[in-house]
Every structure is written in structure tokens, then in C-alpha cells.
Length: 192
Image (tube, rainbow, N blue to C red; front, top):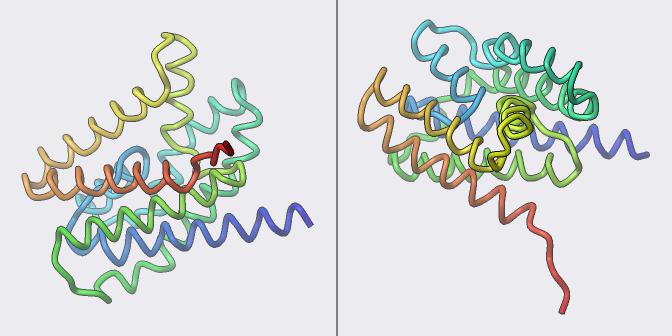
């Protein structure tokens, strides 16, 4: 029963993530942070499917996970594969909802944050730069949340440099919305 529930959570979270990316971010060339953001940069520059790019970019990180963080490897591999495949499956619907770019960035952030939050709540994820941040945190003692923020910031700055100031600003809106949504969905309710 546990594996069925976890599998369902991975599919639902991945579908929300894929919808957020394709319905709301891709039409305006908006980025998310981390490996997903780098995968979107690859898509925008060379037309490679974002999900495929995410899988290829994740290989070195998952090799590191295999040797340093086996629990992370086992809990994230399925999430990364399912979300990457669904990102490419949902791709044909990327121009389905034509709305204002800023609103689209917020809605994309909500969907992505909710998808990530659902998976984190059940102790799985899409992998990616979170592991890299954890590894760097273990080596440097810098808080992992700060390192994730720095990595996300670098990704969207690259996108702004490669594409436009509009991409940069919309991507900032998106990662702030993703972070807030994920935080709210995964917060622990303290009983008084």
C-alpha cells in the first residue's frame, strides 16, 4: 500500500510540475531554478525537449548521490524520471492558456511549487541541484537553503543574460512563488 501511495504522489506531483512548466512558463520563456531551469535554458536555446535535458543533466548528480547519499538516490530517482517524462508528454499543450506573462509566471510557480511540495511531503523529490546543494553544504558548512537559493539565482541570471530582462524578472517571480508555495505546503503545523 505504501508503494502505491508513493507512486501516486510522484505521478500527481510530477503532473502538476509538468503543467506548471508547459502551460505557464514555456510560452513566455520563463525559467525555474536548478536543473529544471537549466533544462529549460537548453530547450529555449537548442529546441531539445526539456524533460530529456533534465534527465541528461541529472546523471552526474545521481552518480554523486549513489556514492554519497544512497537514500536520496532511491527517494528521488523515480520522481526525476516521472517528472521529466511528463514534462515532455505535456509539451504539446504549452500554448493552451494564453494569459498575461506576470500572471502566467505566478501560476506556473504555484503549480511547480505544489508539485514539488506534494512530493517532498511524502519524502521524495525530483532530485536535481538540491543534492548538489546538500553536498556543498556538507563540505562548507553553509546552510543548504542558502546554497539552493544561490544556485537558483545563478540559473535565472544566466537566463536573463541569454534571453532578456523580461525573462529575468518573470523568472524571479516564478522562483519566489515556487519557494513560497513549497514552503507553505510542506510546513509543519505546530499544535499549541
